[in-house]
Length: 482
Ligand SMILES: Cc1cc2nc3c(=O)[nH]c(=O)nc-3n(C[C@H](O)[C@H](O)[C@H](O)COP(=O)(O)OP(=O)(O)OC[C@H]3O[C@@H](n4cnc5c(N)ncnc54)[C@H](O)[C@@H]3O)c2cc1C
Image 1 (cartoon, rainbow, N blue to C red):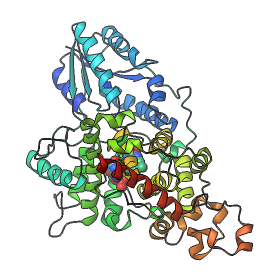
Image 2: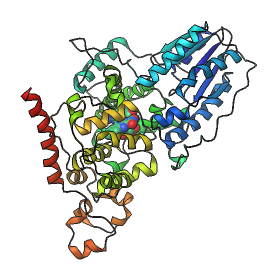
Image 3: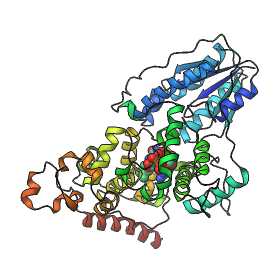
Image 4: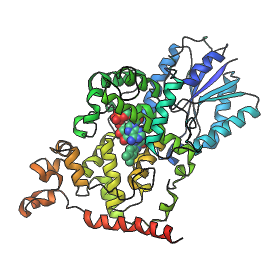
């Protein structure tokens, strides 16, 4: 039988579960397919920089597949409803009797895949789906009470135990397949409406680029990762998130590489590498949020993880939102972060937390608006991690701490960018500001302050803190009165 392999956010040949199984199951060759779905991408706020990254990776993947005698077909389905017939059309045209793919876990994607499955089976074709996106499938771990984990630390402990017990299978890229008389399609250079403003050289495409990034990180940075990861000026993290989000590298490969830096262990122990242990924890955060998405599908539908917080009446502040988006809030670290996002499609993790906390706590603007703006600009935009990060920062999500975790952005700035190097890189209006004033130029004497072409803070942190505390307390009071 000949098999059709549907590539989505798993744009690689190495350690690709569906591709591996398809090769094993087929005795008459393989055809690969990618569905360009601009309507779905728009509906999901996929950023132009991310779509451009997908297309560039798809081109490299097409070449790698061609070397394996697997032709890559490209079909366009303007809406999700068109995906099933488009795929069936390719299967028929290429003589395939089966469709293999790796699961996607978001509500809409899962519904689309169910529709594809029903359509194919109705027409007598075989369909096989595989868990691939995470080291452990999102339903692999259960709490003692049989539910989904809602707190990270116990999830992490259980994850480590399970991985040690079950092991991790990494599947190398398959060998050459039977040559077929099927012509591959060219990958489009761009898709209308998704023209990226970001320099593509920042995010080189392909499995080789991803692997090189992982190797460099393990060689040079993982040792200092625990100490340096919260300092954005140092470039101390892996920047592998776009590659993991698009599936250009597998989480299992990342885990194995980090483990090798930690003497084969997953956790602390004699002689362990604290940087590698910490980095493995970050990979687990990614899996934690994926299982939250599956366990609590309401988070895919713009609903809060903590339902009571859906009653908060967030501020309608168009000016504040616009200034936050543009990086003109008058808080240098927030503005630097937002400008990094717009210019590169990526933002450092500590700054994502600071920017998200500022929007939701200082400006008291609905986390959904920030989540959407991030998604529209991130090269690594991923519903699970983005929604999880936003809801954690807004105190509507899985943070185990109570709602009074309110970042002071200026204190955060002093901690994570002590010399103001990151701020000066991204906010050139402040490059001449010396010393501690870089974190809060409103402290400068009036005359000096007036020479800067930089706005005064648009909100007073102390007053904003009182407002958000009162709003969350009112929720608690309401719950207690019931
Ligand atoms: C408000 C907010 C929004 C976010 N949105 C996204 C998003 O859309 N896509 C995304 O991949 N990550 C998101 N994150 C998580 C994190 O900021 C990024 O994964 C990280 O900055 C990527 O940089 P890196 O690859 O250098 O990470 P490293 O520090 O090198 O970490 C390695 C990998 O672990 C994973 N990871 C690290 N931190 C986290 C985390 N806190 N949550 C989940 N996974 C993590 C990523 O896959 C990352 O590539 C968000 C965090 C916050 C607070």
